[in-house]
Amino acid sequence: MKHLAGQWKTMLIFRLLERPRRFSELKQIMPGIADQVLSRQLTALVDADVIEKKKPIGGGHATYHLTAFGERLRPALAVIFEWGATALTNQAIAEKQRAQSGADAMSAEGWPTSRTKNGRPGAE
Image (cartoon, rainbow, N blue to C red; front, top):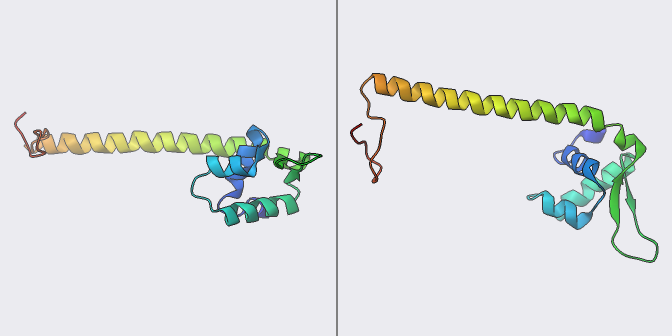
């Protein structure tokens, strides 16, 4: 489990499950991560044998790939991301229902529920 500890490691593994990627690609698709943090997280995952860094023969850009050990995380991460998507959907539905019930309550109490162009309460 320590292999997944850290703010960015799970997302890095998820992105590498899609396909091998270069450092610059990972940086681009993960806005907000600093270069040093990305480098440290990748190094930790390489040290844990979850990913490997492959340098092409004759030079060029290195790419990061999942190892066989890292590939074994695929089913577990699929379940986690499915759970997250469901939780976000349920949260959005609940927030919409709360907003609607609040508007219904305000309307029942005689509060104006529509607004004019200047943002002030208007007649319905």
